[in-house]
Image (cartoon, rainbow, N blue to C red; front, side, top):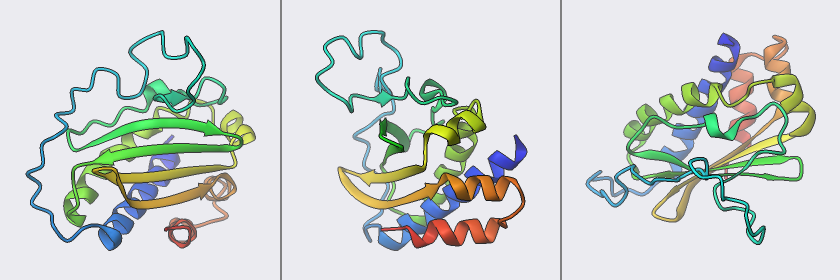
Length: 177
């Protein structure tokens, strides 16, 4: 469990570094369009999310992902929120919205993302059997400020001590767009 927190923490650190490199230079932090009170940001508070079946990205689409509970992926932050989680083939896509463009502030907020994400993977073996990559997309006002992916083979190698934290970080960093 502790290894997963470290792994996810390194992913959050990468996201922070990437957001700082590709973020906007204007970062007054005063935009308050989203008060964090969206009643259904992840499609988890209601049971009618799939009643007509004509949309695939209306929050979460994680019921068919073994070992993963999207309802447990809840970021404890007023400035960052998980907008959507969607399974597309063997890829899990996590869309994150942020009000922050300042690198240091985003880093502080993304630290909680790693801790909160830990609960969502409830069975690592089942999860990696179904998912090959986890793609993270971080947006500010509808514009992507950072994106990267994590190959689940890297997660396995890291958990088996075949890949150091720095090596894992470098692999993920190379995927950044």
